[in-house]
Length: 454
Image 1: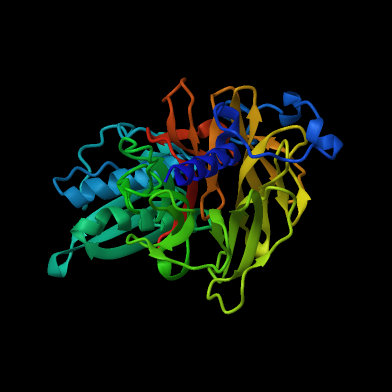
Image 2 (image 1 turned 120 degrees about the horizontal axis):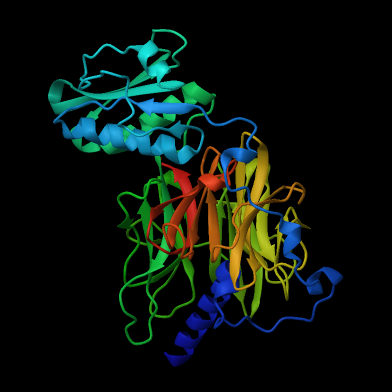
């Protein structure tokens, strides 16, 4: 048992180095060969990362002002849909969402039947007006209605409805936001989705380290455990049939792949301990990082396991694989200072300890976002898939780690230990305007992933 405990502790230490090495001073890496390239020994030069803009002053144009009509109602569904849609739109960073108290002069209580005076709203400087309602429908259901007014005309520019049970109003309000964003921008939103992550739970018993997979909505609401709270889980990833898969260790055993809330085994046919996994966007391919006898490699193959997974033959200590569009795979590798690789080419700046890559396929093209060690903390940076166009996203605010890109490519979620502002927790940031970052939860965790609901 003691040897199994030691092996589990070693594997978790390795994972800590891959994910948050800049802040985990106690973690120890396994023995590795000496650096073989000049890039491995370059002293980090933080000026290479640039500066993060801090206000809209650097933007080409200020974001449009958007108002959500404050409907006065006693309906719980009405209240839920208004608050959810408003919060989602604010998190996008695409709009300057004004306070609910900003209404036209002389306006009284707004109801479902109040006529929208677009000229009056425009006189308040509003560019986009959104009205969301929850109407009572047959069979105990509610009909959620979303309307967009562009204030260039008195007519509704776009309208979308969803029928659902009253208890499902929150989930369908996120769908309503996504539809409204699709009409406004041509790209549907990412809010009918969940973030998955692992976090320590309970107190260690007998030396055990319990880590559980949690799911949470993008606005930070409804965090709930997914995997068992008595096991050690790592690296959640959405796989076939809409189930979450993850690496799991029970009773200090090597990490294997499990899925679903029951932790059903998924045999990959590779010997060793699994420290990371990812699925292709269509869930037809899986990539797993496996450690065996001190050596780590990434294995790739079909999820139906008709053919054995094959090693990718990556640089030493390859870990944290993540799939991107077109079959691309990003991962971490390197003996002394790990770097980010895409298709076996290093793309992160030399001299920086880099980890946790995620692809962002957004309006500005395909980006890779990852964290790099800076001093005693870590910052998020973005590059294109060739390592060009380096853009810094965080600066001088603790350790910012394990980024996960939203399904629409416009937002990135991450954990931060920052003490200023809202403090440590889970943050959501618009990639195009990182100064509009917002905390959605006080939770800290690891191995973040962001996927649309099945």
